[in-house]
Length: 153
Figure 1 (tube, rainbow, N blue to C red):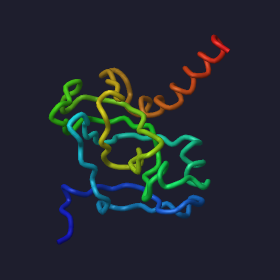
Figure 2: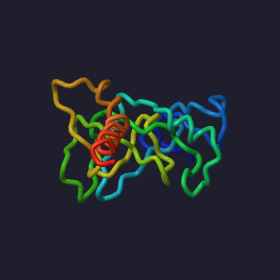
Figure 3: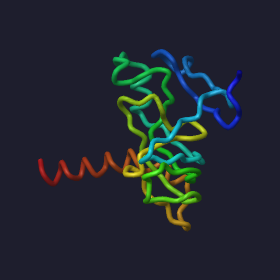
């Protein structure tokens, strides 16, 4: 039997390395991620791509580090739609932003839903724009690392 709409989502993914021609849009046909006890399911409202996403797709990377099929993208902002049994930091309806793990995961930000550990998610205030929040996680982390390197060479 075909998966139900509740079990699938829309996503962009690729199965082999290459240029942008390897990207495929899956319209309501990609498996929706299942959450673990310490995770939450977020409906993605905005996502962003970074140069690392293109580099990972184009260059040879062992499947152990970059399992395929792979949904690209790291930065997301959206709304919590479900939480795992031990997840306590957020509730359904909370506005959040996060950086998806880049290595070792096939899940990424170019999807309708993401499952992510609650410990790597931040709350987005009601006065903040989700589009702006989705542009911040990876570049913010990069900026902090650069400033730390300048301060402690």
